[in-house]
Length: 217
Ligand SMILES: [Zn+2]
Image (cartoon, rainbow, N blue to C red; front, top):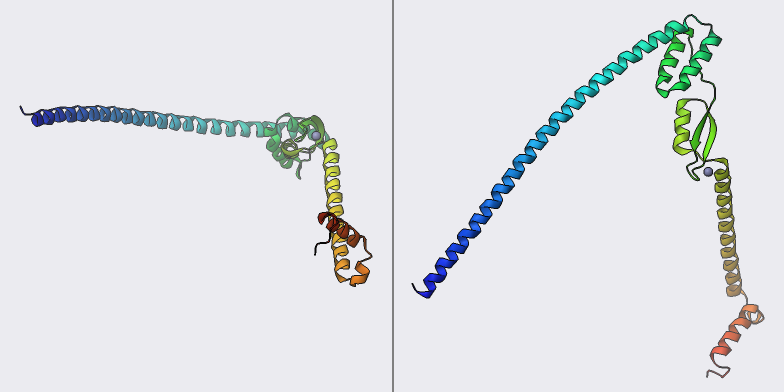
């Protein structure tokens, strides 16, 4: 075999090995894709099952809620409005989920709207994170305080900082105005009058110093 032919055979062998490598890799990738597809199908089945369970639980909760509503209304109908209101108030503040039940029961039995009594609840100040007990007039009032309550100390501090900032801004704008007025006066006054001003004396002093007290001409 000539040298060129040997080289050609070598090249063919190398090419063959490369193709085999690529094929192996391709098979691996395909297997991987097939596995992932199986995973996805399994997960979809899992999600579907969980959705079913959630629907069932939601349905269950509705039925329970309905039963609680009926029971509360039945008990309430044997009470006078003052006792009934006190009793409902205890139920109301037991759990936020019972708020609707209480409101419906009150309206059904006594008519009108139910007003809960003030309840002390612990909330955190969103600035200093201190825990504070505050009176809340409803669960939604409590929830809004949980989200964004600011304690008295922090409110005072905020107000002081705001006032300080406003004072500083006022002072700065006054200073700017005074400077403007001075410059306007200097620009508009007659030259011989200008020669008697503090501004001229200062300007002259600096100019002389720069010129090392020698005449510049
Ligand atoms: Zn605070």
